[in-house]
Image (cartoon, rainbow, N blue to C red; front, top):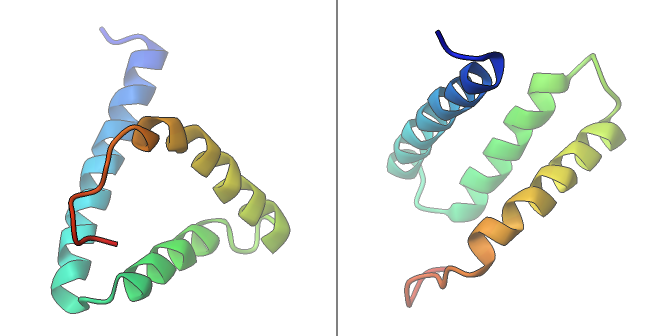
Length: 82
């Protein structure tokens, strides 16, 4: 039987997998990265809509970015991508 922490991580990995599938579908709809980025941020705000003020949601996003940056900072993007 999985521990609660193992189950939480598995739930996260399942959500991450779905998010990456959604990203692939979004790329098929719009080649513009800005469209996709904004749409994903709107989804975060909609997730918390009516429960938290916009400023708090923004702070949550910034906190998650600070957590993720070290995992991506050492990886160089492929040439020609932005």
